[in-house]
Image (cartoon, rainbow, N blue to C red; front, top):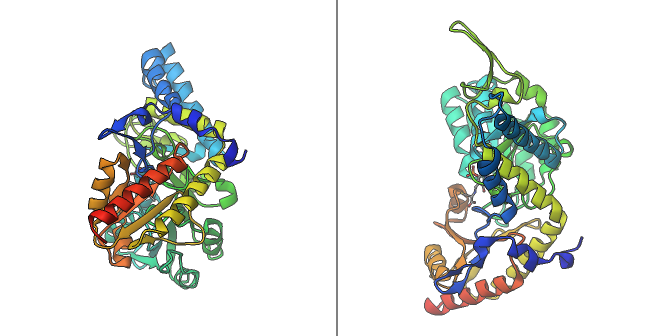
Length: 410
Ligand code: C6P
């Protein structure tokens, strides 16, 4: 399906929240990289769970528990298919990307990483893919190494190659940068690490709603994402891990549902994936994620990506015409978002003025402070796109930015 065939008006109609006005203006929601809005199908799936068949899972012998368990496990199969993972045992439900990465740092890292070892990340990571590794390094005496990137926002592969020759125990990199929009060459980065026998974690928080991910083709050891970025609810995420690795890793948390037998002397753990899912999970939200994946599949990720790419290209051209506006992140391979600064106007002021025009963007460091430090700016403004955004909305954004320019007499 081409971008022209997508009926955006029909898609927009499925998002009740988009119908409102903000400060008397129609809402133009361009903060999708922070969290995307939810279609009615997802909201209905969660409501149906709570009104029709909600109960705790994997425990009850009664009908509601059985129905909830089936719906929850159906989502695991949907995630498996979405990522093309080999088995549902490789799909662990977490609270989000952040928890998925912490799980790997704590369990895999705690088991494998020793003093003198290195963890290799990139200079464009979100704090979620920095701090868990720093904590691991503090605990173990390992070192955190960082792959630099160019002014355009592209990783310097020669430096990556050089850094891989150290005692690296794990590579962890962002697939699509939330601060720059750079789409990293995941397959190539993974191949280069594997050539030295180094396992790889991919932070897929931003990539998951914008491009087809095939974990078997990528061949990564771990892939992390959050439901709330792909039209699903917040509070739920996924860790994909290769089965052999997950089987060898110790549990991340202890509690109910992750055990086979508990005595005061010793506990036998449950098989995958339950070993990593201690306690009552966010049942209805996991079911909501399943509905979100159905919704995305019905439209098709390729059509979504094509539509968003057209918006990104259009916005990039329009924004470039505003004097004093500087786009941060001009990599050849980009997706779904544009970050920028304006001479003389703090990004927070830009965000506030845009809000009065009904336009929601994000202004700040985007939980990627090292990226801001790299460019010597405290913050940027960022417009990010989802399938329901339109060219008209980009026009509203651009008109509002011209207003900012006038107000600050740039
Ligand atoms: N980025 C943004 O506005 P959680 O919070 O666990 O769902 O996702 C964390 C995360 C990890 N990696 C990347 C690349 C991300 O973009 C995010 C979340 C949001 O850019 C909120 S800070």
